Amino acid sequence: MPRAATTTDVFNAVAEPRRREIIGLLSDGREWAVNDVVVRLRLGQPAVSKHLGVLRKVGVVTVVRRGQHRMYRLEAAKLKPIHDWAKTFERFWNHKIDRIKESAEQKAIKKIAQENR
Amino acid sequence: MPRAATTTDVFNAVAEPRRREIIGLLSDGREWAVNDVVVRLRLGQPAVSKHLGVLRKVGVVTVVRRGQHRMYRLEAAKLKPIHDWAKTFERFWNHKIDRIKESAEQKAIKKIAQENR
DNA sequence: CAGTTATATTCCTATACTGGAATATATGTC
DNA sequence: GACATATATTCCAGTATAGGAATATAACTG
Image (cartoon, rainbow over all chains, first blue to last red; front, side, top):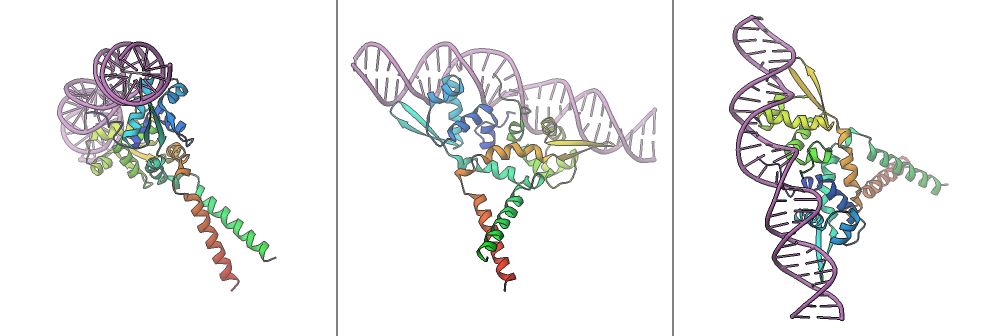
């Protein structure tokens, strides 16, 4: 019985460290050509092409053909399920959001205090 | 060249859907015995034991021996790297934290308005 | 069109993994 | 100690995949 395919879902796609690196590159908001990724990650072209293929399959990246170039861009929204999943365990660690709320409340109180002065 | 092992890191450990399910069970804050997971997930005991073994290896769960029972509990902090990683792409989707701030400010203003009434 | 460049895909190979049957090990009860 | 229960581990078998060499396909330039 085989392991879940890398293209099963986003979780499986990003499990591979190299693919997380690629996602990190593309998160600069720009489009990257395959060869740019090749140079940057010091990987062979076939390897990069294959990784991008996986990411494309799960929708994390999209590709635009520009002549002989294939420009890849990140579709970050597709990573949200991972964030959402991990977020369900947030209550077990630092209550970061609570802290943000408190901080915002303090600021608002201070602001109003100054306006009433 | 093999795929990254499931015990390489947390990302690889949770790529497998069954293991995410197990984590979901343990997130109720209680300790679960292997057999309880078996019954709940309708999986065979060896399979559950192996999945728990992977999770234990990466530190996501810990085990306490209670006589012939092995009680497993979640170490949710170990999932934080996933949240943190996904979070770096948050700026690409709904500005959720901004919304929390606004909401908190609104509440504070309302509270003060009532106290001054 | 020939030659060049970009890149997707195939080929190759060894490894890892999934579930459950089977087995080994550990603990409990009478 | 015999028997029962809990569970870790081994065995089995077929599949998927990583990287890079090789190849196929697509686009560009002169």
